[in-house]
Structures are given as C-alpha cells and as structure tokens.
Amino acid sequence: MAPKECLLKVSLLLIMTALSGCTVSSTSQGGPPTAGVPATCQQDQSVVGCIAGAKGYSCSGTDSPDESNSALSCSEGTPSSGGPSLYCCVDTSSVPGCAADSSVVGCTGASIGFSCTGSLEPQQSDSSLVCSSGTPSGSATLFCCATYTPSTGTCKQDTAVQGCMGSSIGFSCTGSDTPTQVNSSLACSQGTSVGGGTQYCCDTGGSTAPPMMMMTTPTTPTCIADLMVMCTSPASGYSCVGAATPMQSDATLTCGQGMLEADKTTLAYCCNAAAAPACAADPSVTGCPGVATGYTCTGGANPMTSTLLCGAAMAGPSGAMSYCCTTN
Image (cartoon, rainbow, N blue to C red; front, side, top):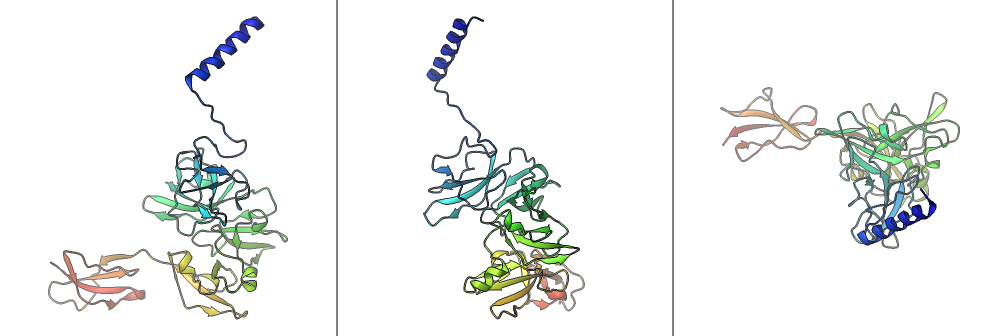
C-alpha cells in the first residue's frame, strides 16, 4: 500500500471514530481495570494495605469502585480523616467461582471478603492474595483475603498454623521477618517459635493492633488472636485491651471469662467458634407430659413456632437447652 493511500485510510478511520462518539477504555498496567469506575472515585496510592496487584481508590459520596465494574472486587469502604472512603481493589475477572462478599464477618480495612463455590479458593487463581481458612455458608465457602507479595521476605502463608480463626491468616517466617513488613495493614500475634521458624496469626481486617502496640496504647479497645495465650484445644487464645472482647469483632466466637495478663492492662480470652443456632427433636428428653415431644437446641435457638407450643427451657447436655413441645 502506498504511503499516501495508507495515510488517507488512517485519517478516514479517525474521522469515523470521532463521528461515532466512541470512547476508548484502558486498563492500568499491573493493576485492576479502570474502565467503568465511577467519576467520584479516583486511584489513590496512599491507601494502606493495597500492594502486589491491588489498587487503592478514594471515593466521595456512596459510590464504590466496583459497583459498575464487574471485573473489580473491593474491600469495604473505610472513611478517611479527609472525608472520602478508601477502598482496596483487585481484578478478579480471572478468579473463577469466587465473588466479592461484604458480609464476611471480620473482613474490614483493606481486606476483601469472597464467597466461593465448590472447593475453589481465591488464592488458587491469584497468587497475590493470602486468605483465611474457608468458612462454610450454605452452598458457598467464605474467605477473607489480603494482598501480599510472597517473594518479599521469608514469610509465607501457612495453613498448618494452629489457632488462626475467623478472618485470621497463618504465616511462617524465618529470622526476624514478620508478615507486617510486607503488608503493614496486617495485625499479627506476637509469634511462636516452631521448628526453627516463627508462626503468626494475622488479622486481615486491620482493625486490631499487635500486642506491642497494646502495651503502649492500652486505652484503645482492641483484640488480636494471640498464640501465646494457652487454651485447651480446640479453643484459641485472644488478647484484648480496653472494653474490647473477641466477640465484638467476630460474632462467630463464644469466649470464656477474660483473665488479666502480666502487664495488668490486657485480658486474655479462650474462644471457640460458636455453633450455628439449631433445634432438633430429641427422644432422650425425659419428663414431657402426654403427647409432648422433646427438643434440644444450641446457640440460643428456641423451637417454638406458630404451630409448636413449648414449655420452659431445661438445662440440656453441653450447655444446650431442652424443651417439651406440642403442636397447636
């Protein structure tokens, strides 16, 4: 093709594009796509915890970066001192079977909640994510994830670390490395020496503080999973200051009474994952009169319905409550 003919065709193409009103969308190199992000949201490199393939955004009003861009999955908006809400977003168009889920308990700050189907996990398709153990929820499994660069330092995600419950993630490190050196939004336990390395439980929410911060700011109510708190299995230890309790940040926990630690400002708790409220007919319940049927309930549930009338609760096995009920 002659140069003059080529130039003419290119010029015509540019004119036709302008007349058609077409716009060109783009994708930022090394990060989530920016097309479709509301005009009230701007990329913000100052958002703490957005590393690896994640991008930070600040948004005014009620808009969020992912509300009109299905390729983005974002954290819950965190209000900043200046007014805009801050988000951390990743491109999950290549993470099959998982979708962002803001209902995941304890998944706040720069962390992102996911709901996945089957045996899928977010980090299987995106190596820049580290995630909590999956929590079953109906037909889905819930995860809380943070962005992470595994090649930085010696800390690696370790699912074998015991005691990392709820939204917490286990890490194993060598030397003096800690997970917070890679992602400063993580809040980690003091660390336990195991087999030449150190294990940590880190909260992805960023709403809790490491034990060393607790001792310097004891008036700030905070809780953190703490492997140094010795609990009888399967319970896990937590350290809290102020009026905070582990149940306030993770409603799935049931905890014993707080015990004052050596620093005189911290309370230690032993907690178990609470069983989902449930009731079931129980033939072992004795003393029910006439045609009444025995029921046993856990988690504070009550069997009474519009067609089932029940008597007073009676203490059952392992903290459960038993009832005698008749149909209406």
